[in-house]
Amino acid sequence: MSAQHARGAQARIVDHPVVAHRLGILRERGTDAETFRRLVADIATFVAYEALRDLRTVEVRVDTPVADAAPVRRVQEAVLVVPILRAGLGMVPAVQRLLPHTEVAHVGLRRDEVTFEPVVYLDRLPADLGGRRVVVCDPMLATGGSMAAVCAMVAARGGGETIALCVLASRPGLSRLAGEHPDVRVSCAAVDPELDHRGFIVPGLGDAGDRLFGPGS
Image 1 (cartoon, helix red, strand yellow):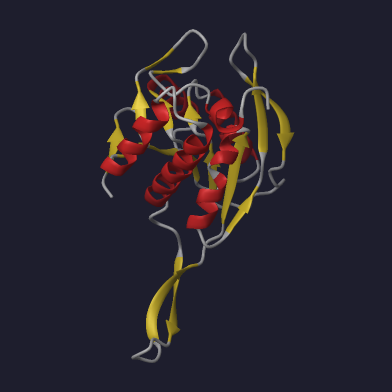
Image 2 (cartoon, rainbow, N blue to C red; image 1 turned 90 degrees about the horizontal axis):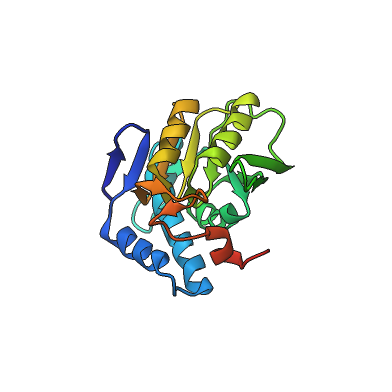
């Protein structure tokens, strides 16, 4: 799978025709919720696969049908997956299917509709992360406020490398995240140029939470 890096931010854009195809369907206004959920999961798999190429592995020996004690590699690292509620929940099952060892810690944020800044209403992060790798899941990196807030929480509790997994990012959001957390890597399917007056990504795909779970959930 090929990937390209966005200028001015540590963002890996997963540039593959099958990802672009799925993203195009996600963008369509008429895409139904069931299809939307499936495609978000598909893209979450692709961006996680690309972001986690350096997972720690260990060599073990297995008996194959034609040879004994053949060397193989198995993933040793247990990744902490942190979905930003509620939209981030749509990415978690796909990431868990991909990775052999995961734990999940939920963080719930709501957006102040005047300032667009996040307000924490649920915090299940461990008190001491002990330098472990953390993958923060949110389909939309729009203003960057929610992602930056969660990355700050992770850093304050001793987290190690932090990766932001997104379906779609905006250039303003990437710039903010790079300014506040320059060591955080972003893996996404595409980067859109701007935000509208509501802080939505343009052209974007609308409110991912509403399209995943329905309005007012």
